[in-house]
Image 1 (tube, rainbow, N blue to C red):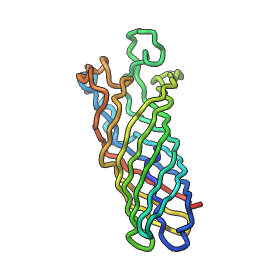
Image 2 (image 1 turned 120 degrees about the vertical axis):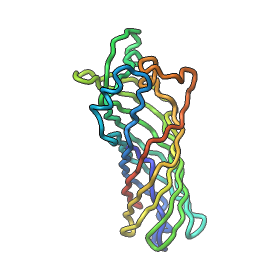
Image 3 (image 1 turned 45 degrees about the horizontal axis):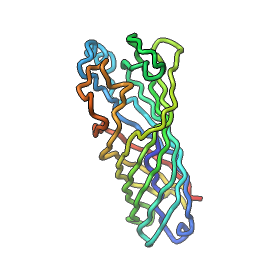
Image 4 (image 1 turned 45 degrees about the vertical axis):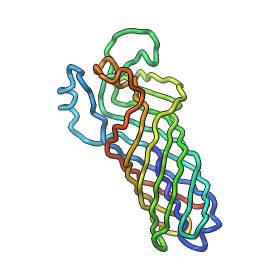
Length: 225
């Protein structure tokens, strides 16, 4: 789930010269269950009472800049996949361009992303650090597996996907290995017309961006190189 959180606080004299880190992150997010005025929405919601099931996996490499002993900044690049497992209708015409009105649904909707994280960190103790992060994400590939079939629709479509803002803590368990936990406090995201469109009778016909922010946590393990 997409990496979004790269806790890399430098926690001692032995860490000052470590200018690069790599990290793996898992993001767990509450389902986006907005179905607006889709006629069978009550049935879909009743069949899927679980709150969570959307997840993101991320792998990143980051450069560390440390102007002061307790303060550091990082930036880098990450590659991520976000998967939504909430069963919902989608507009297959985005992929096929055929203009047909067949009603199809997906229970595995994926976005492959490039991330450009920028973070500031403050060392609160020998092992513990606090982090503020901005996480722009660029969508590269969209995939929707059609429910009940083996058909997977896909399309290469590079564009802005979202920008997340996360607050978190990171903890150094050794000179090289650290763990992180962060919470998404805000996001701005491009409205996904594959999911939110005339099928759901989405009233936001002329809007391009939204700030809807379902609960999301990032769990990270990192390695200082």
